[in-house]
Amino acid sequence: MTHRKLQPGKLVIASHNAGKVREIRTLLAPFGIEPVSAGELGLPEPEETGTTFAENALLKAHASAQGSGLPALADDSGLCVAVLGGAPGVYTADWAEKQPFEGGPGRDWYMAMGKVEGKLAELGPDTDRSAYFICTLALAWPDGHEELFEGRVQGSLTWPPRGTLGFGYDPVFVPTDRTQTFAELDPAEKHAMSHRADAFRKLVEAVF
Image: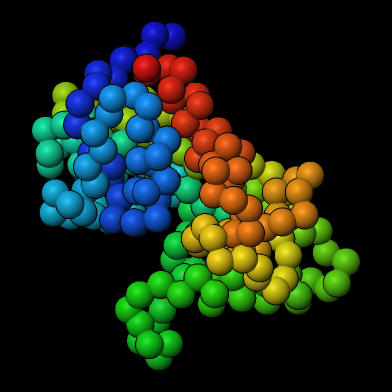
């Protein structure tokens, strides 16, 4: 199948997550792309009503492409835990949302990691702790054309959280064949092997 090529110039990153925008900016730097975030353009965040990563990524990419008149890139990513039937999955960020009684609104990733750990603890000390991060990238143009790319990285969950680098569930995720969590690894090393890097490799081969 032939992919539409992305020309140098402005590209909207359909995200209001500073950590994610920073990571994507680094990955795009070599290609003459000027990333501008949806937040910087004042574009609203669409409701993520999809039940799959692809649906949510496409929702965000099309909303930003329509709102800006520029090509837009969105990422929907999450942590999937095998014994929890793939949860939190599409609802990865929702698990971090603080309720009013927890001092919300806002996100508390330590709380989210604790929820996952609590569910694993209920299953006993010998439970399977394997998990993977998945990243689905959607590229959309103002005329409605779209491209999708998926990446993943396998690993297992550890407790307590370790490391201060990274964001989200990084402090409890140990990639396969490593002893350090994503939050302990040098960012350059994490970028080289992450689910986002895997999806980006596929995107770069296809559209640049």
